[in-house]
Image (cartoon, protein in one colour):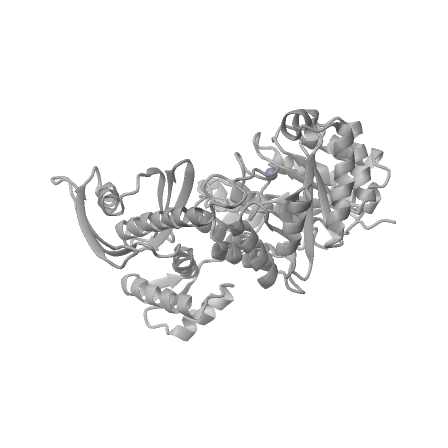
Length: 537
Ligand SMILES: [Zn+2]
């Protein structure tokens, strides 16, 4: 019996592994926004979180299962260690989903067995099928991962995989947890599994890997050639340490080099059927959304979604591209949804036009969010005549990104220049509704604003990243500010967009501080929870 798919299955783990990257922590609402965007992108499976890890994770998975895991939506997956409590909690969170998957894992390398699990090989060989069978009592769709597969004794791993499949695992996922293998080694690992696990045709082979040596995508493509049919990846490649394999790179490599990959899926070279279910035109938008919400900025030279990926600076290239795009472009910017960024709205545009365009862009806002975003839009349109789709996205992201408003910026004013010390005055409304004003001098206007805000808010924190970038070209362009700050080892991000970069900087900072405050409050509420868990990498 064989159940091999005729396409490559895209398993997105932006909300689970991606969210584990330092500073990428997201609120439940933000996770939901990303999940909706992933559904529009057409991913087959969303790994929405690790429900047992914290009540917040549980709630996020449950909400995504409820609202995105509909009949025509993607499968919603939850991660669980190979214990009954983890699996039961994951199943509980996934209950509202039309299609749900439990992903359970246990390490198979001797080094993990000895130092982390303190279990023998015999014990692991018994636990894996037992827990797969237990997960199977909640859903037919069970994925099993032997953690640290790359460093496991292959013979032992084959036995564990065979037992997991016999117990009902429908997908077996091979992780390169530490990002150490090279493409030919990783391909050989997958081939070894195909050749040595007797019941392997009853399961789909999946791969998971990290980009510590910049090889994750290359490793995955080699795995596809050797029989892998599911790729676990994240938007913009975010994730622990150097991140995961980037979804957009994998999908576009399979798309652009279709003819090369077709034969490995048993198709004729010239078959035109897409190799994935991804709607590639949603790639750029999803990338921007994830970058804005996580505060993880995409480097300009990043493949596919970087700002320069489709820019041609050299004269020779420009000339060639003007004569025929294919001279220097292997793919069309439109294929990832990077359109001409036309002017769409202006100062006189009404609420309906605004709402309609947002719907076309795929945003679903609540009535309150829409009202707030429309007010912001009017403010921006007053200062900037032409509003483009990118401006609209920045406005909406600014609106949905704001953490619960504990502190609120009422006023910011700076005075600076080459003959005066930059001075800032700020007025904030604190969580009790009281207005507080203070002033400070800094090395520059933004520094002065942050010092003044710190005098009011009074939580020690360390600013570790500050970045300003313009949304569109032109002197009246909106500026987007992304900041990250650290408090007690955890990182909090803030984002804001405004035509005035000082205002954007202040708003971004307050947004990060509100997140920090919110998490301190939540933590005191959740002190009785299970503590911090570190799942498979
Ligand atoms: Zn990982």
